[in-house]
Amino acid sequence: MFLQMILRWLTSTFPAEMMQGWRLVRPDLVLWVALSALLAVATLAVPPGTEDPAPVLPALVGLTTALLTATLPPVLFTAAATAREVTWGRVWRYLLLKAPVLLAYWILALLVALLPAVAVGKAVSLALGGTVAEIPLSALGAILIFLVFAVRFSFLPFLAILYERGQIAEALWSVPQAPWLGSLAWPLLASTRLTQTVRWRLTPYVLLVGVVPNLPRMAGPAVLLPAEVVCQVLALTVQAVLYCYFRAQVEARGLPAPALIEREA
Image 1 (spheres, one colour):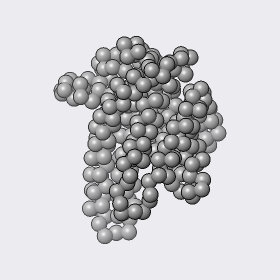
Image 2 (cartoon, helix red, strand yellow):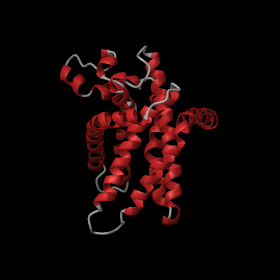
Image 3 (cartoon, rainbow, N blue to C red):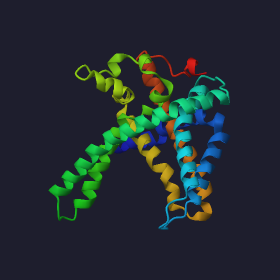
Image 4 (cartoon, rainbow, N blue to C red):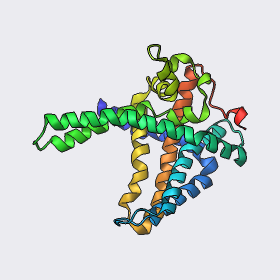
């Protein structure tokens, strides 16, 4: 039964959802390929296995590209989904306004996910200390706990980029016992509640988003650039699938559809 479900998902659901995501990536494919190539060039520019600090310029290029590939998708996916053209001036205003906000929430989400993951890993390690299973099981426990939080926070980029707190129903982010917590971490709380009914469906895509961009590390230098481009475009398509899930959950909750905030135009 379980095997049949997996096969059905692989042969029917997964291709259909990836095609749906691809429709959002395709209109800006040239841009995505260029950004992916830039990331690959930045990676190649950092000399591996040296004791010298990484060059400042490649590190800055890598950080900038990472922020672009995190901030641009919600904006351009929304434009593609609504068949609306956006000027580059407006896109850059979104980047300047929202990238620092997303980065701050990312750091908070990372801390929330890492602390229990590390704690579980340490607890398993202490319980199995000295046995053959210590290292693999402690690592597995930490990864599973981190994955649980990653799935819960998978809508975070879309909320932080496309919405203000006032646009989201208070029931999705408020914490009556600690009002300050709702104000501080509203996108994390809203993402947790919006993903509540679809977490099993989101899990394989969250895994792919984390794994696929790292696959080119196994490729040789001669094919790193094309491998990086292909894997980044694939990861963006998976991210577009997450966006489709996000949009469906927002509509199901009766919230305003994802849109580019007019006052930032």
